[in-house]
Image (cartoon, rainbow, N blue to C red; front, side, top):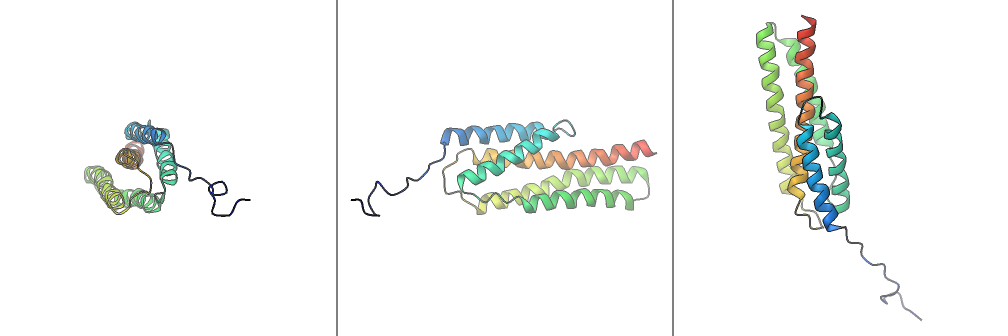
Length: 157
């Protein structure tokens, strides 16, 4: 008869596939790199974000990207409002482009802070690549919104 403390009745701890985690971290970086291209990389940007969430769940890290989603939404609205507030066309285009390039830097600082504060329970040497990939993906989304606003303005003139 086995007791509850015997090895046969304990559930084994499930270790994640380390090679798979490293490869998916690399894939997240590559998808984020291609997602940096405005408009053409939108699908790959969403794929990089999805891979980052899966990796975070598998390694036990917090998969919460809510602050970054909020920053993305706020940045798109800020770009649109800033675009509507300026009166001259030349100032408007330059200001929107400058803001479109400064917002990803701010978001990168948010990612760096989250990366430094959290430590996953499972070993992942590709963790930096996954963070870079998701930051590049969000940067591509912000750049796509920036260029979309500038293109719509050029078409409406």
